[in-house]
Image (cartoon, rainbow, N blue to C red; front, side, top):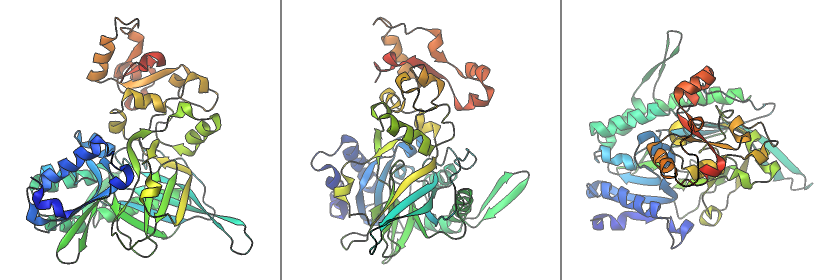
Length: 437
């Protein structure tokens, strides 16, 4: 089936996994190739990067499997269809910007700027260190880094292109030229030339909250079309192309920060992020000072309600250091704001929620939500979870207990301000949650 494309595939995932490629990665490659095989003459190359895997953010937003970490090179005449959403996902024109900081100070941002639909939004203060060649003294430099997109606005436009069946040529042109008119509130309307200008405006506002002024030092865009020579258009999904000899900026993980990967002679594309698909920080296994560091340095809207942020607490890919060129710069996260997309949070497995929930033994580490101090675990009330709990009713657990279930009405009665952030869920004793899968 894929014979016509076999010589057009570059696969870099073995550099991370060796001969033991995860089943989800193998399945994802097959899903992408099955779609592209329908128009083989318009497919020039498919490059699976080191970070290729299921995209938890885009899968949650779409309600179906979506994959990230690849570059698809196409003829402008390739016709998009809904099936292409498996690899053609976004959000379109997601941009990472670096600003110098002198007197800037970290500020916790609310959901007005750290919007939940901007699933990988970052605004924070980062540090680099370098040793003085003459004195040996270690010098530290501060920067503000913002990672932002138009969130669901970008997704809607991309879905429109696939559902309308437009060509890559037309989608590229519309992305660059389609104007936006948005109503920020109070009866006002703002116009933008395109998505990129809208994102740049938001980015400047977010950076300004950290005290950054003026133009950024560096800007990089991913989840976008890039036109190349010889009538080829690349779609970069969580990938980047070096704009100059400095190389590309790569988000290792929210808690670690970013690295700069140098340009090397044997490749054109680099990962824009190295986050794993479903490997989260196990906060209960951390030392007290590490746990406190995690929850004081990383902030997100609603962190007074939940310690479970599947973006902020994702770990990096294994073996990424040996799979990629040696970084030339490391931007360590000092303090940062991250978004929290409830669609992704609600898809977490009970084991993932357990990993990110401190126990009552850790109550003195930090001002955790009250359910953590009570040694309870909050789980979204899905049909699958209800079925598991009902099946446990004869196993010695008092499962059919009204105090375990919190519906939206009960949440509203308890705290109307937080009702929207706390939909129907179970608040289970930890020993019961540990039996779930």
